[in-house]
Length: 342
Ligand SMILES: Cc1ncc(COP(=O)(O)O)c(C=O)c1O
Image 1 (tube, helix red, strand yellow):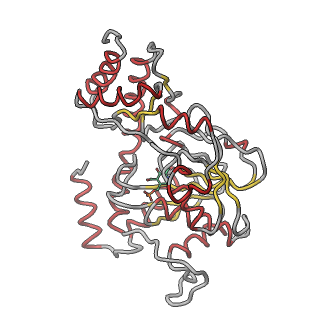
Image 2: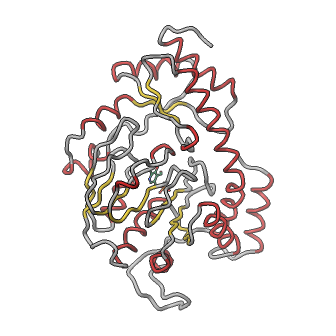
Image 3: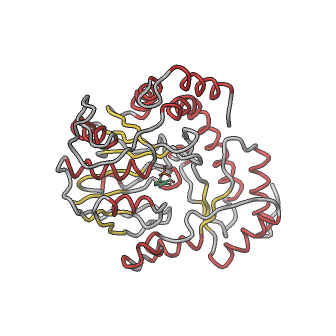
């Protein structure tokens, strides 16, 4: 949703600020630190980069060994794993619980859990060792007792910069300084052509940061609206034994996605029925990461995750829906299962 405030912020950044490292970049960083409750924030060009950079910085700081095995979830966007692989480490996929949350390993090690769909990751205290949390979908339901929180501002996310962007937040100063350098081709701080690490250009564009700043001010109200719609779905679908609600409690969820589970034999029929009633749905995700080409050699049987990908449906969720839209979706699901409309 592009408002006058977005237009003005973008034009102001374009005309009056530096394209890289301009005033809006600084303001967006500072605002995120304060809003998300961490001491340091670095901005970069995507959530995928944020994860890779955080892993590499943890290696450089000797918080984790190079080529570490990293516990993570197979039920995520592929970046969670590719960031691990591209940093020279190896993903070790764990099974998920009935809400799609990675089960902890209880072993000392390195963990990258995902706050999937925007739900706060509930097993953070059981993840022993170093934790880098993938909060790409969870702006505001991230856990603070981690080494880092990695966010995505990709266009579909609750908080976007109108394109690609990402952030890494932490309380660790040494780690933060390494991250800042890695984002900027491994430069020595303050020196234009002196470099300390092998890295790449991961910098964010200042106009994107200006737009992010406008969106950050809208975030709280948008999440409140999403929670209201999620609570509406929950209360309208809760008496259907065929539907499993996996989005409670709503106050600990930001509802990047609203997902239900139904029996795998009915899932595609329900999706088609909704489509015929002009309701588009999604599946996040249709395959586990280890069922995809780059990770086939990692394949291991994780029964709960394999069951879940066949049962999940993402229903329409956006702060610009109306109450009537949500009731229409919920009532169409009710009629599919032969229940009276509410
Ligand atoms: C869970 C998860 N991790 C990582 C990413 C990668 O973020 P980006 O698309 O900004 O690179 C995404 C977003 O697409 C995501 O949903």
